[in-house]
Amino acid sequence: MSQRMKRLTEKNSGLFIPFITAGDPNAEATVEIALMLEEAGADLLELGIPYSDPLADGPTIQEASKRALEGGMTLEGAMKLVPIMRERGLTIPVVVFTYFNPLLQYGEERFTRVASEMGIDGILVPDLPYEESEELTNLCAENELALISLVAPTSKARIQKIAQRAQGFLYCVSSLGVTGERKKIDERVYEFLQTVKTSSPVPVAVGFGISSSEQVKEMHSHADGVIVGSALVSEIAKHKDALKHEKNRKDALLQLKTFVTSLISS
Image 1 (cartoon, rainbow, N blue to C red):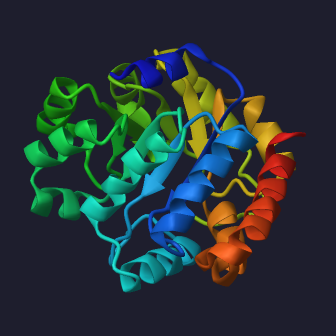
Image 2 (tube, rainbow, N blue to C red; image 1 turned 120 degrees about the vertical axis):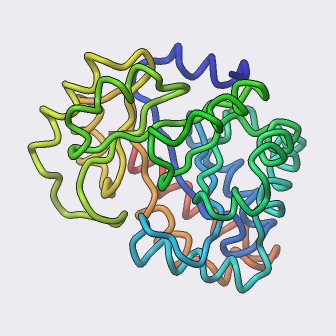
């Protein structure tokens, strides 16, 4: 793993991991949103690759992917944003969230090599089963990348096996179904998180549906970190027109930063 990711694994509480879609609303805005998120307190950035068939994503992120794809964003284009972020001062780890088909078309060996060269620290592939991930795990290891594992309440007997091989952090899916803001978190997730924590050698972060400061606070009492995606992507969508244009972007970024700090300052 990269030194950035190793430092993250040493911080075992209060982690805040935001998700954004690369290219939404455009490439330059993505870079500036990433920098703003670090300033606001993000410990790691999850950078989503826009994809036309995002099986795990709800309507909010689907729409973000559509906007980014219409703007010409690609897998390689998204990866090329990371060195720009690094040049502009981004120091936190970056994990690329991509479905397996774009990765397969690009080439697994080529993808892991280029990702490492671009200053990316990890990869998360939600539709790649644990049982079929050995080849990608080995390629990631060769390139000092963490292959982020996901575990869900339905994993049951597989939880311990998946957790013990986790790298960087372990992504716990808080609910069944697709991503999206939820008014209430299913209380059964707490027992699930406790089970996962007893098996995981890395920080346990929970995502899917966390959208309010109250939910962030509650999840921080049961897990090492929280992942916020749809709520942030929805907020970006509200300001998409201002974010596209340099003269209006600063104010939009300030409003986004206020939203993010309100989520994590409770």
